[in-house]
Image 1 (tube, rainbow, N blue to C red):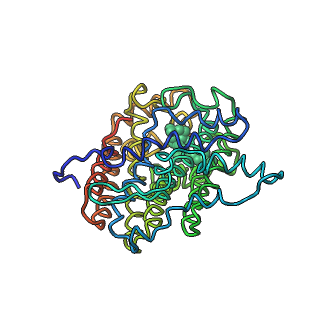
Image 2 (cartoon, rainbow, N blue to C red; image 1 turned 90 degrees about the vertical axis):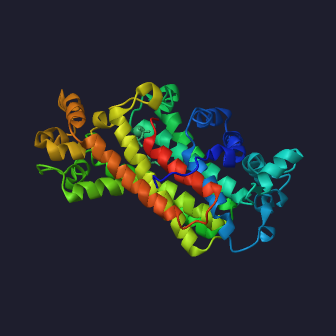
Image 3 (cartoon, rainbow, N blue to C red; image 1 turned 90 degrees about the horizontal axis):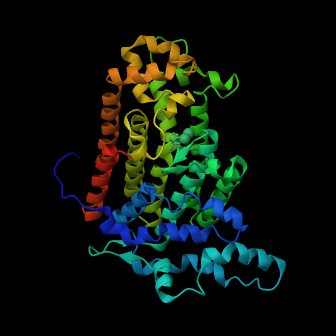
Length: 405
Ligand code: FPP
Ligand code: MG
Ligand code: MG
């Protein structure tokens, strides 16, 4: 990692698969009350980075050479099976069709669409992405987006991706219900992959997301005692951050961001029928890249430009949350103990903390920590066979830690 490698544009490798992702997801959100579909679609089709599906597709490609069975034995019809169930004519059928039709497509689509949905795409190196792995990429983006809908309610966000946050546009109730709806559709699609191990891995992500959010709430002033007073969350009563403060922060970071990325990379390798070491390497890669990604997110909350970042800077401090840049700054400036303990609730706390973070090594140290995690991610990638897709994953890891948005 960091050594010279050919720079490979991931879009050259998986761009064709990725280009259909948003359209497919929008289709997968139909068949409900039209207004629910409208609200649920709100964040799709904006300028999201689609980093999670990009990683899933590249991991699928990069690990396909290690598959334990030939492509010819893979069941491509996995998503087709649904339409053969005959429930015509009764109430069950009406509900079933409402639910399944738009998801399964199948009968009324033209040949090109059919090929795109049901056949593997094979690139010049002979590396394949299976239909089930493309579907996983969609599921992953849906789970992520569902969590953002809820997050924007919890955080009272103002903007996201350069437009009004969901609940500013539709209100809290519709935003929460639309999040539930996206999550439900993604669960349905997950079940339809008919792979119990993958279902188990991805389902566990959802409680990780909730637990990460819960751990973070202990940090904020919005939660009644005793929830808002966990010592480990704020280092309460300490003059500076302890090892436990950092441990708690990193565990939360894994849960809120690392888990989804780790487990979707893992599931991509599982769906590809890769050997155990490769599945493990995919998990470790995703875990570390995910933590690095969130560390950079926490950093950009101090250094980002609002117009590029697409959301306000300083948001974490305003929510009462001390992230890595603050914890490092606190090591240098013990006077941060008070604002940290009272969760930046007094007038001037946010501004003063912002200043001290910029006067300290907090930004640099957070960057170095992100770099360390990126390095671990790159080490895991070395276990994949050499390919353009693997090089693209190296590059993407580098892009993630240098990103501005
Ligand atoms: C963004 O973090 C939010 C998350 C990474 C996860 C939020 C999870 C929940 C609200 C639990 C509910 C989960 C589901 C699946 C419905 P952030 O607020 O730090 O980032 P931001 O600056 O982009 O808002
Ligand atoms: Mg949040
Ligand atoms: Mg938020």
